[in-house]
Image (tube, rainbow, N blue to C red):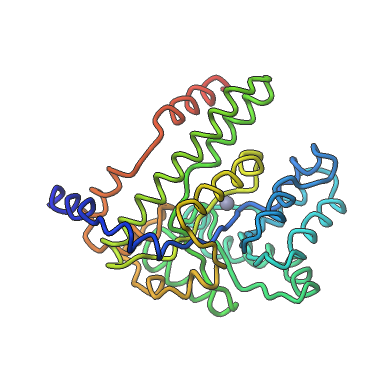
Length: 311
Ligand SMILES: [Zn+2]
């Protein structure tokens, strides 16, 4: 079964046809990063870069971040400056980023509501709606009953649960990257940034192919990354390379209008993997595909060594 499936995956050539249909919505989680903001003299480097990239972006807010240092009023200005940008769609990512599967229904719904208090007001002042929600860790609940219950809560509160299809462990790379920068190892930092871009491009290619298996057609991709130093410096590089590969940058709304996002979800656990895998009904097929997903072992080993060293 496995070899037949993988053969099917890699015999999907049609790259010319595929190329014309390539599109992606960029989404950024854990906004705003108040530590970077403070260390850069109350300025967000990522936001500045995005201003010049000329593409739509959706951001997912953790309001709790505004309390991560003592500069609450300044941090509020940062939140306002993100939300005020015309090209930005705003979403709720819970107040303090807990894992629904771990804290349960009551605590999690309280987190959803606490996470929108300020954001909804600021969004309204900017003439925007707050209608997207993304689960922290993309954990939608530990079984189908929990998932259905939370889905109903979100629908009742006029939220759309937001999927993603491609992510490339930027949270891991940024820790290696920031450490290298701090130690003045500029070449090493650059190499880490380039590895992040390379792995991301491989993953786009891979998920474009898996989409052909899971959804039987090209899918409008949704890329998930985070508000961090790595993306401040390397998201523009990734965007440039994706443009070279003929990707069109679209809004989250346009991506989610792809009928693929209406496909039933076949996974009822709390793991945070790509929605493309969740559309695959056969568990063995899903696992086979996961085993051939591109990984950067060197970066993972470096991260393990670093976190062990910190203990
Ligand atoms: Zn997050």
